[in-house]
Length: 305
Image (cartoon, rainbow, N blue to C red):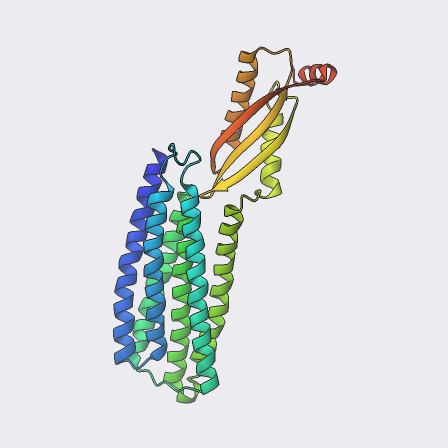
């Protein structure tokens, strides 16, 4: 039930972003053309990439949050991860486009003389996109969706590119000879967007390759398991991430003289401990192994009593 609710929230958040992007695409094209701002027109192209990622996010949320089934026993979380990677890739491609275009403007010393209308277009874009960034980021963290968080950063990248446009338009209005500041600001922004895109893409590829999470997460899992009464030791810990949520497999060692029912209760206690202590846990499997060292088993039992 929580997953269904979070998927519904994610869809609502993304649809809000999509409608805002559609509005901004029209606004930037109109104010850019009438206001004679090529930078604002290029920024409209950036908003089109935002609209594309909104579609990717909707697909990723709808498919990635489905419960496990016979064909996908580990769930559909990797679909969400692939969607995150796509958002990161779109960010990088968009930033490269903006950067190359800015570099060419600097090299060719292109001159633009935007009107005050272009200034209003840039200000409205910044206000809407920055608001949308904070709204989406908070929601993504609340429902624990890396895909929504990644999309929030795409909104932030659009806001930053509009800042570059605002700087260029303002400088050109103050002094026409300063028109080149627009290109330099856009070039600087493109580097920042590439950095964010690479981080998002890197994290998703890290997840797709089944790499282990941070050492502190593994330590927390082991400590939680060892704190349960009846657990002598733990080993063969395996943790994978799917859709930003952990799937854990761990072996615990218990006294060989315990009954099957007693060993099962210990395993269930470990499972409950992990569910309570480890955030973003989706699934945990606890294997029970008998201890071959009776002295160690007795000492652990006595120390915990």
